[in-house]
Image (cartoon, rainbow, N blue to C red):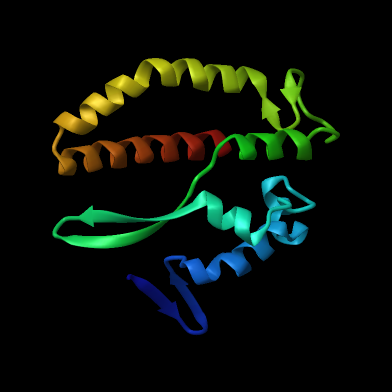
Length: 148
């Protein structure tokens, strides 16, 4: 497992033993306020572990264990409930869920998901990584230009 160490800070892959601490942070409004959840997420350690999996990913010639949090309907429910009485939300908002954006993402995803799956199966991995890197660079530059 890759670990990054700097003075008294360690960044590493999450493990099952970390679930109690992660659930505590996710329930702490001071920690989660930046993400729009001033009261925390209201989850339990068991519920957190139920939504988490540890998957083995083949990276080149080695196998790495990766922590994956499975987002789903519960996340949408939290976004809706926590933003239900929030001030200054745009029209057509359902809590923190902006319905026009949700509709646009769903419609575009329905048409582009088959294309993405087909490309992922046919293109070589190095080319896919380069395409994704290019996409990230373009999006990053666009964000920087909009911020200026």
